[in-house]
Length: 234
Image (cartoon, rainbow, N blue to C red):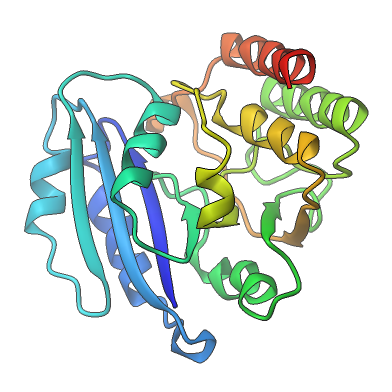
């Protein structure tokens, strides 16, 4: 089986080399998985693409696709998905907030047939994840409550980056997202399709705006609107 690690990246020259090295070093042979890393450079004006091109993996295949202009995280994921060949897909942000050491725990339920979709929850280890600012905490609590109420998905972390899917399920959703509304669109469509989400606890250490964090309060408003849109449209 092949795992596609989908990495949407915009202006991540400070971190992209390090996260690629961390992914490459994760040993998944015990789960019977080979790795491909699919990076979508979302129109970065910096050296993000050059660093990816220069990266020499030892245990992975690295593929680079590009957007000529910045379109957003959701668009980058959709573009990367067109190139991905894996049986399983995991979303991995290009920053260093999420620990790749959690991959085995995230992947095991799918590999062993116990789940089709797995989310890594930042709230199962700590009630307030390390470094998370209160506006982000509040937005996540509102979005998670709303997703559970609207779709009955029974999750604890709607906005987690670590979302893992059997790739055919993710492709079957015909995603429309362009920006950070990827998460609510996927959650809503999982709920509409009555596909259960298996959650596992993960480590997390938030970064701030000065370190390159890009999500803003307006993205929270758009996320809530996306949940409502999926609920109404189906």
